[in-house]
Amino acid sequence: MRNFWSLAVLGFAIAGVNISLIPDVWVFQSQPAAGAVVSRQTEGGGADAATQLTGESENPEATKQQTVSSFPSLFWDFNNLPEISYSQLLEVLARRADSNNTERETAAQPEDIARFEKVVQYAKQQNLPDRSIGEIVQAIADNFLGKPYAEGLLDKSGAEKLIVTLNKFDCVLFVETVLAIARGVAVQDYDYQNFVNRIEEQRYLNGKMNGYCSRLHYFSEWINDNQKRQTVENITAQLGGVPMNKQLNFMSQHRSSYPQMVKDEATYQCIVGVEADLAKTAVNYIPTNQIKSIYSQLKPGDIVAVATDVKGLDVTHTGFVYRNADGNLGLIHASPAGEVTVAYDLQRYISRVESAIGIVVARAKTPN
Image (tube, rainbow, N blue to C red; front, side, top):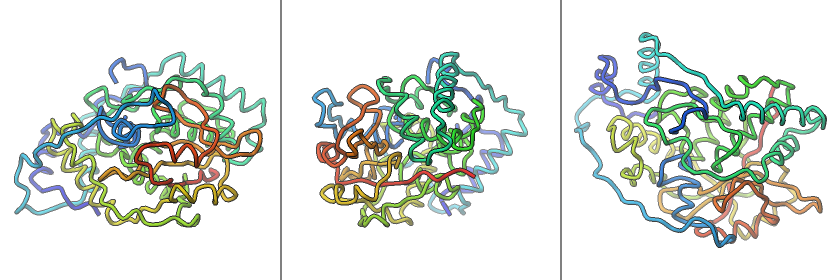
């Protein structure tokens, strides 16, 4: 369990002090103000956000390297206080939100709904439900080729909100969106609200949005949590992966780059607890020079995350295995270079990403 919250903080939460963990509204992309550690954090940190640190040398227009600074660690003294678990605190905060009848607003841009309906019609016309889940994923991903890349979409508003968009993506948002649609298609569920529910299930701890810290910021955490719910299976070890052997603490070590943590000590302590929990789980990866040797074991639609040697970080980017017309395996992804595109050869692409050391692979599971 993530034992890092003091009873003092719990008391503040119960008493009604706003520690910015419970969202006041539930909003889709209609909010004008809205990136993992993988591009769903604000300007610094994470997969795509770390691409700002690492770069992608395959494209000369890739995001340039940036630096992030650390922030003094603690405002409060937690040393001598009793502890409760992370999950216990989230439950208390959730009950508090319910007791206050917190309004949850759900709104969606008409163009997103129209885009969703267009993809659904395509799925029906192509009889996609008759295909494997991986083939469905690739076919759905194809529908978004050329859509623009946009970073930080989930972090442009203060409170955590459920952002859904089908017209622009960061790398994790692209993976989540395609996977959520594909899972619906696999069971012939074409309801837009159910698609939105799947986004929430994939993005947040235990499938429920409960503030900034409940978002699965580290992609290793994203894989672990979705594997618990049988959404995906981490197959990296089966493919011959080797241990990464590093402490994941990029977010806490670059606190000043995350406004949610700068402004809220409780949120910072929550992220520290997430990182402590991640330390209990081994993270494996396939070294770059061995990727081509596992092509025969990969399937179209497999989720690929780019493992990195950036200190404190697990991955810097993510996308899907893509089977080209000639059978060669590439990567379809929302590229920081500008849009959703296909890199023709997976190993060659990874070898050109600065600071990349290999890949982590997860496979979508067929929904019940």
